[in-house]
Figure: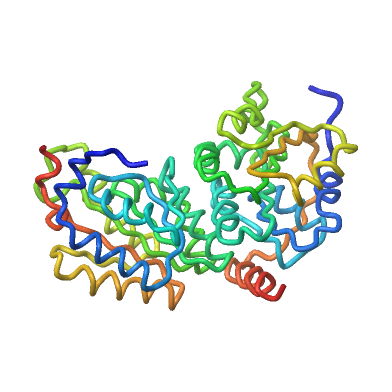
Length: 192
Length: 182
């Protein structure tokens, strides 16, 4: 296990500093808790299910709103379940879409079973193979500021694989009512 | 890019895919996700050729469910085109539509029913309508090209005016058997 790894809460909090009008889709489980812990925001669309679909929600939103930046923040388990969407996104080349994989190489919600990334399956290489404009791995908190800049102005599609520790973090539970999460997001997006 | 000859396209009666396309345009659909199906080939081409529609080729149908949700968050209407086998791929992802109330129109070309030559299509084709209903969809079945405009139009209005999930099953009788045995 690499000694140099990120604390997920600290990293996501750093990414969302001064977020402005950034649109955030968070994947089910810890990624949703991380986004909520960084500060509840109406432009967060929290997923509590639909595993494997987070990146595609990001694509639909990025295509609908090319004037806005879209950040998908999700775990390695959700990412791996939707691998085909990397190809789908690569075909469409959305310039305004970024995917941040919080990679702890485990299924954290279900008992910390190993995920495929633990065996060396590489999200960065897969993103590049799918014609993402940029893809890189980060494992030090010092890199957070440059990743934040990428989310706001890097040419997409781009992917950041963030190597995070597999330490358990307290659950921070945002809204669960899907209709409410959706409507709050749409209202906030239309208000800006 | 389109191949210069497409036998599937040529064999399909032109009117009903054009009627669907006109309804999608009428209600302002801006994104269309699809896994290709021969029965949808003309409609797919119409969407690809329309600069007002983002056509998104999916690697598997459940990706389209996420696409619809994302489009709706961004204020755009989206439709999905798939074969009946693809409905089975979507079941868990459909919970996203129902849970959040995302309006959605799914146009399903049926296999595994009238005159099917491939028995491997039958298990999924024979449960497609039930699966959709259990997943929260209103379903409408079309057997005759004369009904396409009316039913697709009504389905689109219900889906997008009321944030409902509507599936329109285009029966194998409508699509025609000829194309499967060229």
